[in-house]
Image (tube, rainbow, N blue to C red; front, top):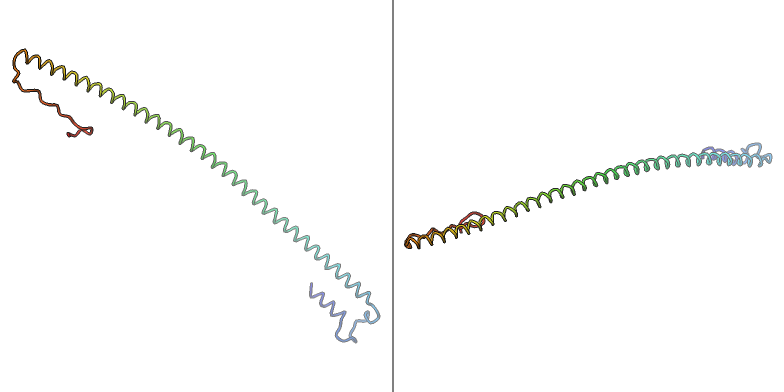
Length: 165
């Protein structure tokens, strides 16, 4: 387009005044002005078409980008919702399992406490029975007069882990 404009200018402004086109010499400046106006109008129309085309391209590209962004945002929202639901399910499962384990542990602790209480009661009964048998043995020896008889052997006590002190 610039090439055409330079050629048009060169025709209207020759280097040698003798080479001027006939219409200019005859006072045809209106023809040249009309041609320049026509050229300007044509260039403006071309520029307007090109501008419209660029605007349309830019709008189409903007719409495509907006569509991609909307699609990405929708997929992200779906994934976020799915992850939130999964997280809530996992938290619920963990809380349920924690409650079950706590209940089982408390149950076992209660059973152990009851067993310990029963064992303690049995040990106390056994000690009372042993004391009663020793007292009875002592009375029997006094009645028979066998005071010199060997005493009952001492009980062996074991520590908490079953070892002797």
